[in-house]
Image (cartoon, rainbow, N blue to C red; front, side):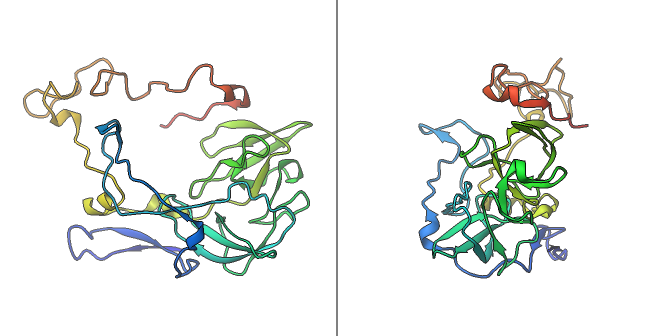
Length: 277
């Protein structure tokens, strides 16, 4: 896998980059594993409720098997594909019983590799088993928060959690944010890190490419008038001029805690994520 940086032929191409992977299979996606994806363009009942979203290229949703509940049935990786709906690559699995499914591809997964899900699955990259059977210190991904619910933790490109401790009924996993969380020892997790770890290093390069992704322009608040934004107004370049930064609707921004104080999963968090410096 490598990042291709384009030559500076035009202003839009200047330093623009894409991930070029030799693992990607050049094929059309499986039709029966696709679903319609309706565009809502950041609107609720016709009114914009989420700014800067809209347009973009037409996409179809890939039905991903986050549970991977075909236990003790070996599967072979038939293709590695890009998914427009997520940052990681996905893998098409042909199971021995003839069924095909999409799963999240782990780092190093390639066409022809065999994988297995089950309590007795070997501890190797791409396989999936329960947490209590995984050695401490192993990098895991697509982790279940509750048994049988399917993978919910560490699913984006390049993400992975480290299994730090396994006790009688619970295990501790350290997420890439620094948060340490408790999960049940009977939860399933995939061995290895999620693919496409170079995703964050991509330089979009031009505004038009952002529009293909469904992202509309965002205007700085300091460039607006006072009637439009709390940061607006003033002669020339003015600072924020407020005690605390606010949203256009006067709500606190930048550092305001948005997590509910009585959220059900608070009791599973041993250590909070580290603050960005």
